[in-house]
Amino acid sequence: MTKTKKPVSSANFVYDKDAAVKAVAFFSECLTHTTGEWRGKPFVLSPWQAKIVGDIFGWKRIDGTRKFRTVFIAVPRKAGKTTLAAGLALYALFCDNEPGAQVINAAADREQAALCFDAAKGMVQNEAMLEGRSEVFKRSIIVPNTGSVYKVISSEAYSKHGLSCSYIGADELHAWPDRELWDVLNTSTGARRQPLTVVTTTAGYDRHSICYEIWDYAVKVRDGIIQDESFLPVIFAADVDDDWQNPATWRKAHPGLGVSVQEDYFAAECAKAQAIPAYENTFRRLLLNQWTESDVRWMSMDAWDKCGTDLPDLTGRDCYAGLDLSTTTDITALVLAFPIDGTVHLLPFFWVPSEGILKRSKRDRVPYDTWAKQGQIEVTDGTVIDYDVIRKRINELSEIYHIKEIAIDRWNATQLATQLAGDGFDIVAFGQGYASMSGPTKELEKIVLGEQLNHGKNPVLRWMASNVSIEQDAAGNIKASKAKSTERIDGIIASIMALGRVIANAEPVEIYASGEFSFI
Image 1 (tube, rainbow, N blue to C red):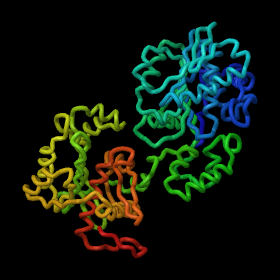
Image 2: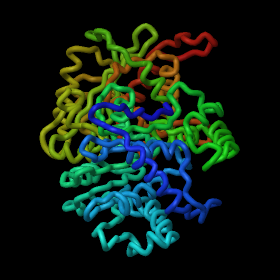
Image 3: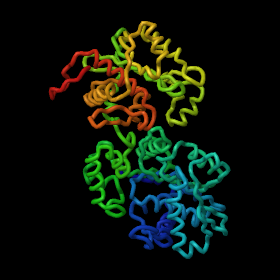
Image 4: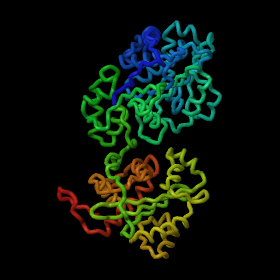
């Protein structure tokens, strides 16, 4: 996926070579590196960087303004994107001929935003011509004769209204906690003739984030699925099917390999990723620019996605339920597990309280409100989950499916467990420690890898599967950890509990050619 959208000449756009050359020359003639082995040396752009700069400032509309208004630059770590972003911001400050320019460098937090700004400040202080035209402060640079300013802000978006940005440098967008700052900044450009937003980021793991939203848009523009002539996508990354251990993949994904980062460093990091499985995602995300599922991976989402097909008609079928009530203010999950002909089919149900659902969607950065409208989540009235609604729903489900047992953690649901037992259900106390959880957790891993699970492509359950982190004891027992997991995992806990009852009630069935046995 190491591609840049090729600008297309048309009657609506022209390429101003002189403008492109001027912008590229600004870097080598006016800017110097401020750190590392190149400190003090002219900032000579690498070919891939020069292409980006030339495209941004060379392509013009018929009225003479820039063609591109948003530039999305996705490159791995150690490719030199921070210095490139600093140079672009300085060009916008000093050379853009924008009256009263407001150049903003934004990031998830002030410390991250300061990395780019400090590089820019050092470049100004190293060049007498630039320093003589400006006043340099701790977190801002002012150009008095044009009334222009360059400053740093972070993600507390509530304080950023009233801006009139001409240039926005959005740094490491994958780390932004939500989309609020993005929306505030981009809606502040309306009064500018040719505003420019430049995103510089590596890949992340939160596919509900603003970064993934813009990344996906960039890919579609690049591939011609969406036509947006004002958007310039530049994505350097390994493709999903590329061998991450192959040096050819490294060279494909990282434009700075051999320049800003050496191949022996890559080799060492790759060896570390092979030796420490939990580091594999870090290597692939930061150095190969691949989106991963979480910082600490438990289950491959590629393997999980292979297990999703339409559920068969389960009416009247035997099943085992796992019920994870969590707390009254968070999501509650019930999962029915149907063992049929060597495959376990999962039918999940989720509940959240109605009040605060939009706040909860923002907090967890997932579309609870959309899922509720789609029927993927059931909403109970009030600020807390109404357990009577859940009890009624379980009784309704028992009229459709043959629920043989319900596994439940009595510590969280004593009253409901008693009520369900009174309704005639066989309630099984299911502990949350290694003794109860390790076997079915390992079994879930096994049947996912063996493609003997069918989760019906449920989006809520997939999101929860992507969040899971695992705890392991000295004996090698494992369990899903709510404390260590990135977000909600209630549906996976309920699935594991249900699978535990499937195991306890089933005969061993040989399903692997290797001769291993699994209880299904």
